[in-house]
Amino acid sequence: MDTVNIIGGGIGGLSLANALQRAGIDFKLFEQAPRITEVGAAIGISKSALDILERLGLHTKVINAGNEIRNFHISDKNLKIIRDMRTGSPVTLIHRAKLIDILVSNLPKENIQLNAKLTNISNEKVFSELTFSNGLKLRSTCTAIADGIQSISRKQIFPDLKIRHAGQAIWRGISTMNLPEQYRNTYTEIWFKTKRFLFAPLDSNSICWLAIKNAAIGGKDNPDTIRQELLKDFDEFHPFVKELLLNSSNFIRNDLADLGTEKRKWYQDKIVFIGDAIHATTPNLAQGGCQAIEDAYCLSLLMKRSDHNFSEVFPTYQSLREKKVSFIVNASWRFGKMAQNPISSRLAKYFAKYAPNSTVTNLEKKLNDLSYLSLPMTTGAKHQQGKKFH
Image 1 (tube, rainbow, N blue to C red):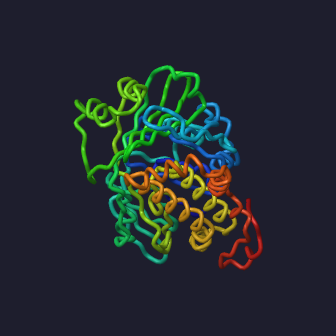
Image 2 (tube, rainbow, N blue to C red):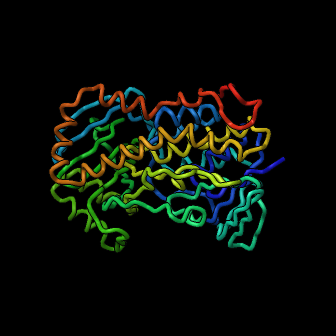
Image 3 (cartoon, rainbow, N blue to C red):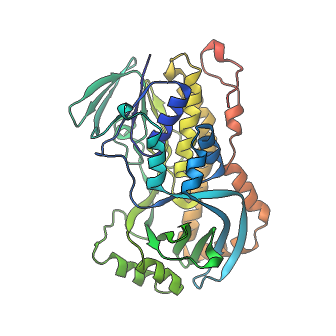
């Protein structure tokens, strides 16, 4: 039986491992770190991803470990509500580490190899040769790359595909404090000039927050002064923002970036890419992790029906997933650039205040759409023609 070798133990790689296990396909997952975990930040799981996790038998665990977000507020710097919306399908907000623990706990330990950083991938028509930092070398007839936007493998296989930077930085953290009643089960996003501050409850006494502002690419923070610097940067915001920063236990910084939407292949010969490794998106729609989960499930369903000719399904996998992913990447990028510009950010607030509810409803429908999973399969294998999968 052929083995699918998965590179990367993040949300995408672990979701694929769970989906393959459910499909009865042998896999091996390689993670460069000494243990599989996540830094202190949160992730929103939308309905489409929750539906897939339910099919994988993980839905209840995720729901129980997270917090349901039912309302969405856009506010000004003084936390005066510009727009109050109720989501048609609640989002589950969960600590990334908890989600990772749930995904890992469902997998056999012997199928996971730690301290295994992929340093080189040599691609051939029949197999790929994988070289790891621990000295391991192996030939793989199917390799799934899920090692994120900085993917070493993608840089080797598709060196012309470059990271697109938005010119903004995002800081994430979790604050330990009680949340006022009006913000329970609510995601709040503050817009002021070219800065944004977002917060939502993880549980009864933990609040995740994000701070976004224009910044140079590759900027670094001094851990001894970052709290004071952010307090200064957002000193015009409501005092509650200051309270969140003062009570934060961590400060994680990243550049806002994606991989754009220019045409590219998601596979080459026996290698296939999923999640941020091939279609990274900015976090403005909170869809990066969700789309990696969808990739994983779609790919596993196709592989299950391939009679182990896994690489034959790669074109179908891309064709099924590409339209939705491109829409999300583009919409998220446009939203971020609009908020980044002083003039367009004012227009955005006006639009947010007066746009019909159908605008939000239609976006939510697109984000949660899984109808592509019911499309006929069109891979080269004759016995698959006309079948549907779900």
